[in-house]
Length: 572
Image 1 (tube, rainbow, N blue to C red):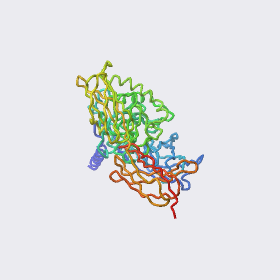
Image 2 (cartoon, rainbow, N blue to C red):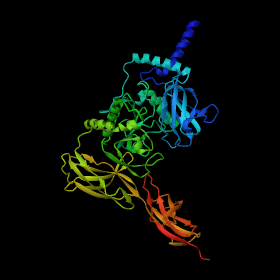
Image 3 (tube, rainbow, N blue to C red):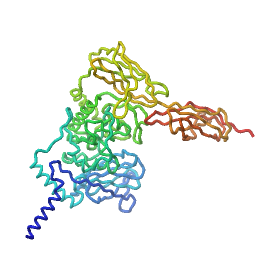
Image 4 (cartoon, rainbow, N blue to C red):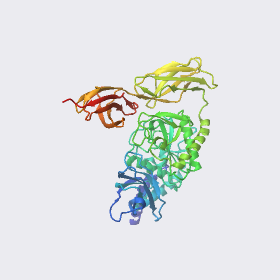
C-alpha cells in the first residue's frame, strides 16, 4: 500500500509539473530576468586593458542566462565588447555590443544561449555598471532545467497524439510568419498598453546585434528574450520591432496588434507612426546576412508595403518627430528610401555595414515580388508644393496632375486635399482637374502637415498621390529701442503665432572684428502668444537681438527679424 501511495504521489507531482505543457500549442519555457552590479574599481575585479580600455575579469552570473544587456552612468560614448562562457566552459568570440538606442548610456543586449559567465571590455571607464539578464529557455537553475526537461517531454508526447494543432493562415501574398502564440509571447508577459496605429509609408531595417552562430531552434527563444528585455528592462509596452527575421529565413510576428495593421512600433525614433520595422537577428557589421534572410526580408516588405498602398521603390518625405537619438530635429521634412536603414533615421550604425550594403538587393527583390502583389494602377496622381516650408500665415500653394493608365488626362475629376490625422487622412480642401488633367489649390494651415491628393475617377474609384510634407515656421515679431543706456533696464516685447509656450532670446555683441558674437541666450515665457522681458546690456557696444523658437512636431524652427541697437555709456 505504501508503494502504491508513493507511486500516486509521484504521478501527481509529475502531472502538476508537466501540466503547463499538456497542450497542443508549442511548449514555451518560463522566462525570467535578473540584474547584477559589476564593480569597475574593486581589486581583482578588473584590470587596465590596452590603450586605456577597461577589461573585466571573469564575471560569473547568478544564474544561467540567454541574453545580456548593460547600463551605466555616463559617458554616453563608451563602447562595450563582450564574450560569454557556456555551461561546458567554452568561451565565445568577442562581440561588439551596439550602443543603447534609448536616452540613457549603455549597450544593447546580445544573445548568450545558456551562458553562466561573461567578460567585458569598455573603451572608457564608467560608473554604476550593471548587467541585465534574461533566461528564456527554462535553464536558469538546475531545478528549472529538470522541470523544463519534464515538461518538454510531456509536451512532445501530447503533440505526437494530437496532430490537429491549428496553424494561423497568412494573408494572401504574405510569407510564412511565426505568430506571437507560436514563439511564446505569453512568456514575455502581456503588452503594457493597447497597440496604437499609424500609417505605413516606409520600412526600416535593423539588426539585433546577437551572435550569428545560433540554430533555427534557438530563434523563438531569442525573440522571447528580446521581447522580455524591451518590455521589462526598457519599460516599453511590448517588443519594439514589428517583425523579426532569422538567418534561416524564418519570419516572426513582433509587436502585438495585427500583422496586417499599421501597428506603431519602436523601430526608428521620430518616425514610428509612419513606418514598419523588421529586425534581422544577428550582427552584420562585417558578416553579410544569408541569402535566405535577404529573400525573406524582401518578401515580407514587398507584401507589407503593397498592403498599405506604398511602393517599395523610390523615396518618401515624412516629418520628423524629434527625439534624442534622431538625426533630425522635430518638424524637419526628411526624405527616405521606401526601404531604409535604421541609421538613415537615427544616430546608430544599425543594421551594420554589411547588411546596409545588402539593402539595394533587398529593394530589388522586393520590387520584383511587389509587382505581382500590387494591382495594376488605374490612374496616376501627382502632388507638388511650391514651398516646403511656409512662413505663417502663408498658405501652401499646391498643384498636380491626374492621368489614367494610358497616360491620358483625367478631366473634370474631383480632387480632395487631405492631411494625415491619426491612423488616416482628413480632407481640408477640394478642387477639380482641368482640361489637361492638372489641378491647383491653396491650403491655409497653422501647423506642419503631411499632405496627399485624392482624385475620384469617372468609374468611382479613388487614386491617391504620394505624401508631401509641408512645414510651417511661426511668425515672430519683436520690438525694442534702437538706443539704450548700458546697464540700464529696458523693455523688449513681441509676439509668436501660432502660439508657443516659450521662445529664446539670442543676444549677440559686435566684436573688434566687426562680427556679432553670441554672448547670451535667455528662455522667455510666452502667454497667449505674447512675451515681455526686461533686459540690461552691460557693455557699451552695438548689439543684435533675435527671438528664436525650436522645431517640434507642430511647427518647424522660427526666428524673428534682427533688432540692432546700441548700448551707450549713460550720462552722468
